[in-house]
Image (cartoon, rainbow, N blue to C red; front, top):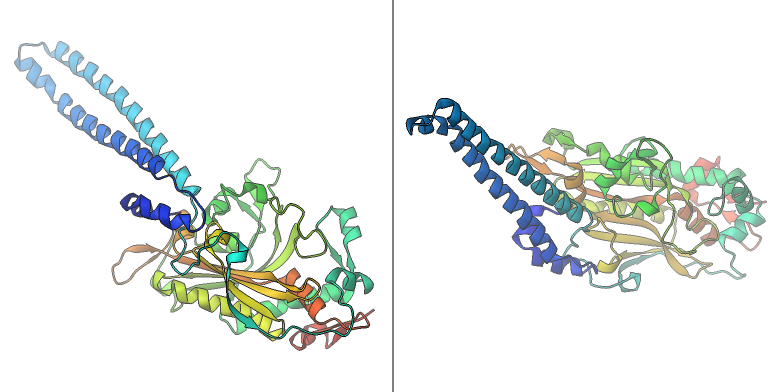
Length: 432
């Protein structure tokens, strides 16, 4: 959520900044709502002062010749009128404040100054390419053809069990999927300094509001049919970041570089806005696995944390020897909550293009303000909002797709990357 003080100070500047991402901030509506709230507060303060003065009038009225009983009646009548007016003003202030909060909850984050202008992914700025595209002396197959020819990937059975956009994996393909998870977790915890954390796969509404999925993106979520307001997680970002909700960390708890968490979870998305894209295979599914990286840092560490976390995700691709490119998302392609995002896009030979495999984003204090996630600055003794950073390190299913397609052989077998072989019992290939 944006800082309402900053919006009040210069709402037009906020509107101009948000226009970079194609969002129209209604300045007149905000100013009118804020004026309503302020006017109700001012009038309430005036009535409170009048009530205080009125309460003292009994003696003055008696001094003017009014009987004590009549004086009390007059004062009580005035106080009752003031009480009715106060109740109305309190309700008006409450309504205006509620509308202000709803407006801010529906307003996206202000992009960082480094974010390039643009309307769509076509306007994203490429900043790096790593690795050479593999060349093949045979007709390239996509991951679905490869998996089915090996007898290890089965979409038909998944449709029977659940429906479309689910997959069943067998044997050493399922093992390779599991190996990727273990490899990523080991890398991030043993070499990159993240603490592994296990979290619920079901979260409440407050958690989704905290990280910004609600109220705007409810249609993208799987809501449970329950008396409680519960949802399946769309990403581990939600439960892991909400560890800090309504908490005040002492400086020593953050350590030198802030808090770092690595977490493996399934993710569940309705893909309501995908309109039939990538229905084939494992590119865009309702259920998939991710290893998520989350950092909770001080404001002055925010920019460096995003660069560092992105580098940690890149390291996975480099060790797997998967060609990829790194892009800065333009304003029009930024997620609702992000200030700045790097997308890592892996090369998929069957599509002859790069596809997103990780989004690494810095959010500033946007999520922390929604969650009231704070730390105490020892220099001032005062609480300050944390800054949040997260990214996939990596999306497991898409990593598996990239390995299958980039490491395919003419006979239909698939070479297992060297770094994964210890997790595969030494196996160097997937074969029939």
